[in-house]
Image (cartoon, rainbow, N blue to C red; front, side):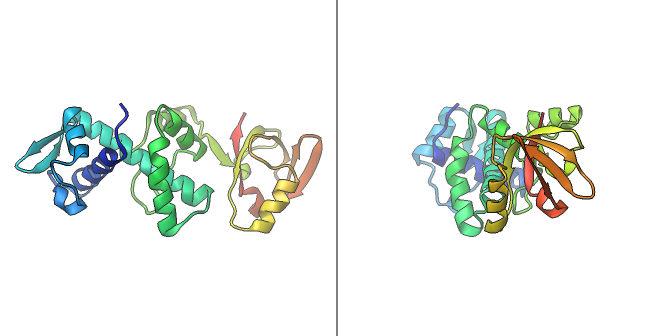
Length: 215
């Protein structure tokens, strides 16, 4: 089901009000929507919400859709603020724009890349997906810092997480780029790894900023 952006915004507000703040319903006046808004009619038409005395209540299907919607939003927040380093109001706005693209399994790939986070950057819970439970059962935490790899282990570079442009340039000059294969040959006292036919040594602090997908 593909809902409009406004309909998804209402579901998010419902999830926060009902599931997290303990309200029984959502008062649309609080978020600036009217009951005759097309987005409200859209949700009612899909039997996701019920309107009673001017208030919105979740139907079971709507609660599940709200859960998925708030999950996508908070994963988008983690991507913008943790990976792209876009923080504050701009990060929130970009996350709002990006979340609507996380359908049809894209959210699962993003969740795996981010190592199945449990909270958003604001400390609010991210509802777990099936991928989170499966990863924990299998002991496969998806993307991890290079410091969590063992000597002799190979991985695929997922992203670099650093706010220091000089560190970023240094790693990129080594060939530490998303999609490239990396082989960790030594983990102590320094981290030594190979990218292609070249070998490099870095300290623990820099190794923590390289995130890899174990192979």
